Amino acid sequence: SSGINAEYGDLFGITTKMMFVYLSILLSYVAGDNLQILNIHGNAGPPPCAKTCVGTTNTAQTPWKQVIAGTGERMLRTTVDISGCKFVGTPIVTTSLHQVTGDPKLDYISALVTGQSAVAQLTKNSFQVYLYGFHGKLIKVATFTPNFGVLWDVHWTAFGYIC
Image (cartoon, rainbow, N blue to C red; front, top):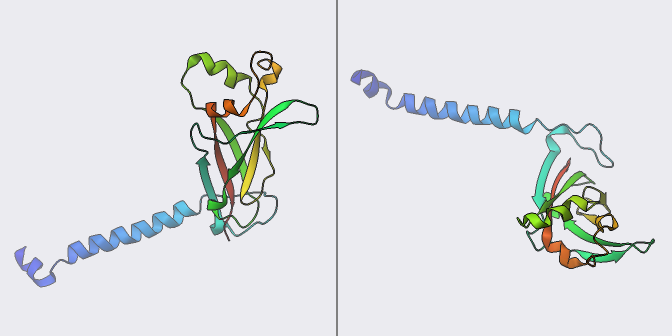
């Protein structure tokens, strides 16, 4: 046994390292090719260029602005920056609203809010989300203002091409 080690040195250690390198390459190839985009508006690219990018706005700091709709209804709007994803065309984006506060007394507010999954003004670098005034239920009790924005942040997932 010691004669084999002396004759071949650390061949086993080198072979094991090479096997890990090959395995890593194989896994990254297989794992990197599992995103398939069937249909996209705009620039489609080859499958290796497909990318998933996820993020969230800053907790309790999402910059909501009050806007007035053509109907006179108050809404909140925020613009979400996704430029760090480096998409070459307009991606597919899905969103959800995350209630920042754990206060159960405020759960009903999040249940009444609408619009959080509607993506507007989508580009390869940003998109907007509008929140509508609680189906009009809360507007009689409190003015729907950007102060409500500290209650939520936006979680998002974008699928697109980077080449």
